[in-house]
Length: 222
Image (cartoon, rainbow, N blue to C red):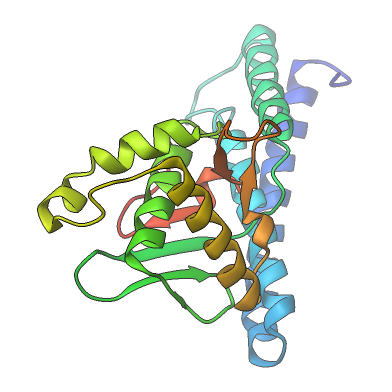
């Protein structure tokens, strides 16, 4: 897929990584400017940088160390790895590229903030369901969490047990909380498709955005 000899291929890959990094910086500058007068534009620009960051991270894998030489086989292997990862990301077919942060706990304030929008205050049940969807997004990127798995995760949640809160969790409760979360997200200016349903009823839900866009307190995507 890459023309020319090994050195040409290596240069193309390195130049691509540098170009993306320059574009990322430019977009960040634009986002800061747009934030002053157009929040929608700022949000779109910063979301774009999230995708660019992923491409840069992938490109880092093929950057040689100082004085290191890569063979044609090395380049081909790295290129194949990058292609596979990009194909995997595309296969998830996320509905949004929203950047979100979930804060708080059962005690005190709880909120969901979608970048560029005012924080959305969460009820205790909403916060618990959203927290487990976020944790699942990090542990199993792109996968759905079934309704029964959500119920079991809530029943096993030590925070819920210690607070002696929501003792009887049923599948109907999960569906109700998902519905209320979508309503609050849409009311707050976000995309309700951020919480995506599996095609089969009861088969589950997922956060429909890449895992590196999802933050729960200090939890980052590995």
